[in-house]
Image: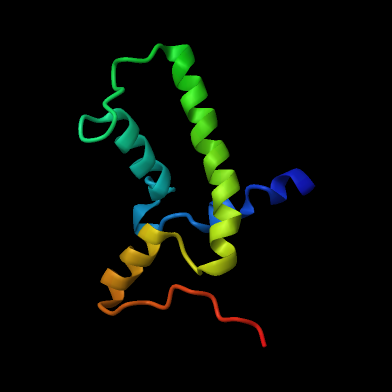
Length: 99
């Protein structure tokens, strides 16, 4: 059960219900910057076995950064943007400090 607790912060930054097929937008942005021409342009330059290492690296970054981010903020950055656009006003992003 303790191993499952590691992935809780990553799943907390999941997309709103309307974007369920696109679960973690932050990872998608990271991967498009890695693979497409406006980023590093590695699309069609890596072998299948090399893509395995890219996947592991993206997950590792998510597992390390997500708990740190969620200690200070309520949402992931793109989810905050989505909520702010949906409600047509800026949503509070920072967590309240406990007194």
